[in-house]
Image 1 (cartoon, rainbow, N blue to C red):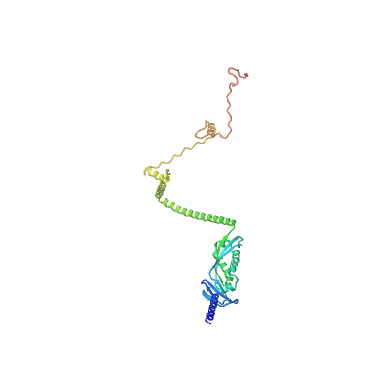
Image 2 (tube, one colour):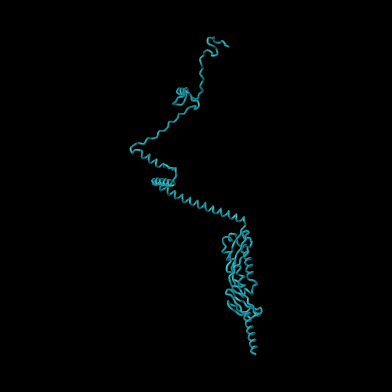
Length: 329
């Protein structure tokens, strides 16, 4: 009898141990437990720690409540300004309602991934290339709103969405590089022109001061010589200012000595024919002797002059001693 009681007690204890082992569950701190009894959702979510369920009747599903980091595959799209780009992103989300994440959607991870890809392609088509490259914060916010709206019904909250990389075609990269180079060259020229304008103003002011104080120019010259000599050059070019020459010239003149006017060079007198001057030309009037005599006698200088007739004489073709009128051969 005693043996039967002991055997019954051992059997009952074994059943209790087996029941406790089958019913005991442990929920971790970052998890929540959802119990389904005969396929129906039990009210209340099991909190972290030790919990019990009815074996073979209840089924406990654990849902991770941590933030999930999920990369979004690169998506090819055409921007609003007709540029083909390839954009990838990363999404951060977490489950805020374990029951909805288990009941309302089959696989909330896959659902969030597909929603992120479609939203990314949509945001690419609505944006310009400049927005994708420079205004990513605004695009990230718009993408987050597009994904978070349907995800709220799944018990999932989108924490953050970031666009990681924007891949451009090689031709577009070269075009953008040329544009950036041209823009930088334009800014460099503007800065250089502004510097030249400021330098010209300062030089104009310095010229005005030196014009009022001639000694300032000499001091500046001495400073330049000192600066050049400090470089250990073998050759030193010393400019001699014109103002110093004028100062020495004024100092050389005595206070009571009159100034001698400069002597002007004599002017050449005109001639009738520069190439073949007439030897009989009068040096005072520049006219020939015959013209001068005709003018003095009251004759018209422009009237034609008859040639003078030579007196008769022996023919040059006859030898001396030959009578006139005799031909000589």
